[in-house]
Image 1 (tube, rainbow, N blue to C red):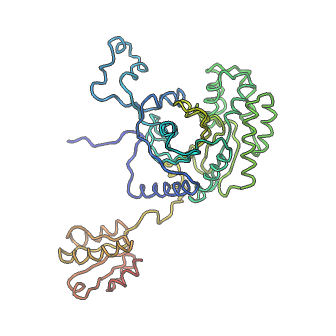
Image 2: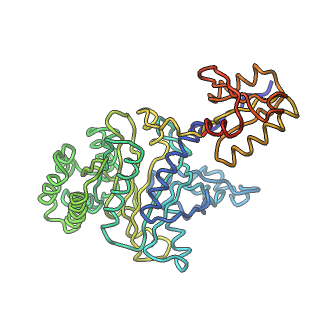
Image 3: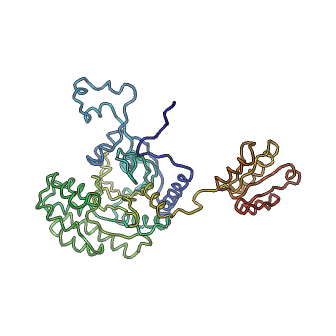
Length: 456
């Protein structure tokens, strides 16, 4: 007996209705991307390993799916290396390509590679799948779509303001109220590390701090201690765990805390600019909050960072995030090209809309009428009508097989098709159709124009 097929953990099949709902979200996001002046690009699903490795920090590198070289991929591995079982060194010999981890680093590679063909500032959006060797759980998959928008070639903080409004516009269009756009600045995190005496442990500090919502205050303290951050430094950062108040109140406290750090104060000034601008152009749906523990955990952010959380009524991780990366293209040889971008988490947004029952009833195109197949002559008569209706943009079907009436009616019921059209010898002779309303059960004979009217 053949083994039942399966798919890898962390991946999914999608039914027609699920695809329709996903496309509804994608189309909504894409419409707003274009409204804000972004242009689409696409990049390959896999990149050269050296393009990706080392760009996401140690934790991110571990989650990159490596692709084995084709053919005899062990031919470059000598006996000593093979015997050492050093997977890190061996990987470089047997794998030269990897599935993309996100869309931002491939975008940076794209900008550098095509720098003579694009005009700066360059505003691009990209909606494609990415892959991460993560542990699957609710809202976290190994294959998922990212919906990114980025601007490169401008240091203006008006871009950050624009992205906050872009988030707000998308969630307004999706009728998803109560989302919170959290913001912070990596310069502020650097300033905090500096004033507590842990500047040399900045990456360890930010990676641990970023986990506050997942492992709690004690978990963060424990991880910081394990990374060599002193107890006295952790005591100095303790007030951050309970930061309360409006964004402006938090900024005022940060100005006092970071007064001795030039870099930290630059971060405060940048967030102050953003907060002032948003105050003049209020958000419609989203809430804006300053979260000083937000670190995003990625090494390439250098300025403002964002993370979007779902409404409090839904237990879900972040549904969006991003930030500024002043030197990302520099790792590929193109210096002094600042960039800032955000991403929408399509799969998590889907789960949130589903849980809150926010998808429109008309999200999937519904077949308006099914023409019953009584035989070859009748089918030919019906398919001519089907073709005319389709030219009018009306979704109609002809049942493909000359099957029993019960089977064809059952098909219409299962697909919730509102009208069934019957055409036999009598109807063909009079150029009419018998129309059955599947909800009321009533039947009526009518001509093509009358039928078109009710289907429209």
